[in-house]
Length: 61
Image 1 (cartoon, rainbow, N blue to C red):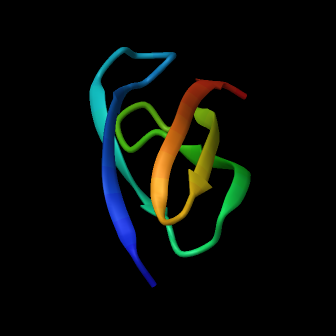
Image 2: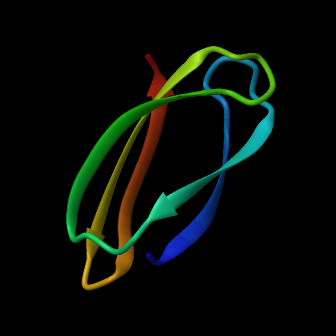
């Protein structure tokens, strides 16, 4: 499994956090992960094409 660490700001507390994204499957992935700082749910949407991250978006759940 190929993973990449993605850094971004929490949409709730604005703290810089990171998530590990699985790049081994092409296509769009959507899931909810809690912020490691404020514990609010963040909806993550990202797209992988040919093993590369093509799109990433994080918003309040």
